[in-house]
Length: 243
Image 1 (cartoon, rainbow, N blue to C red):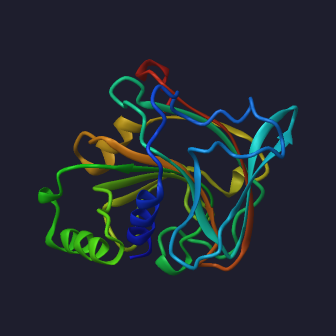
Image 2: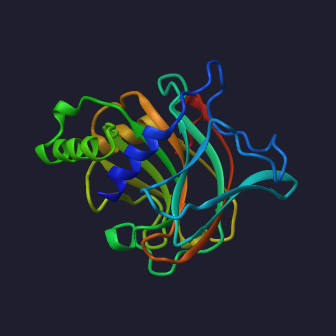
């Protein structure tokens, strides 16, 4: 239920995207130590949870976002302003300092990651199972907001190899695609994925409208510490895919 409440609370707290704003997160044009973009919000996965710290820092002559989690879990999120029919490809950079000791994305009690890129989608909930619809109703009762129809994550995994697809331990409506692993620790990676294509592959249907997207570094289950850095996030036409 953690991911369900996380998504509900995040969506309930997000401001509407600015009209005419360019989708994505351009950090390289900002100053180290400066304020985060106002339309991006650092939101905890549950009420009372400690928040991961997100800070603009200098790295290799450019500005990036440093995430520091200490037994914490919060996501830096933005309301969905991406037309995946026109720009289905997401391109981003990240670096994780190290694997999280004991973390395993296949085990709900140890489901932490030093870096994630998260997408929440809308869709026709009447097509869902009774169990999934019950979870949506519970979230509506608890938080007064609808759950996303589906959640797709790209994750840096301590225990699974890149290319692995991992259903969330609690619900099949959250799917994780591993794109980085322990062998990538300490190295910047330039990554590129076709979000629409990946969604269709793991959920077996075309994606509905994107409700929100963001990044997350979390260690609330393992109670460990983790540090990661994120570079610019951009959305590109489908011809730009490399996955």
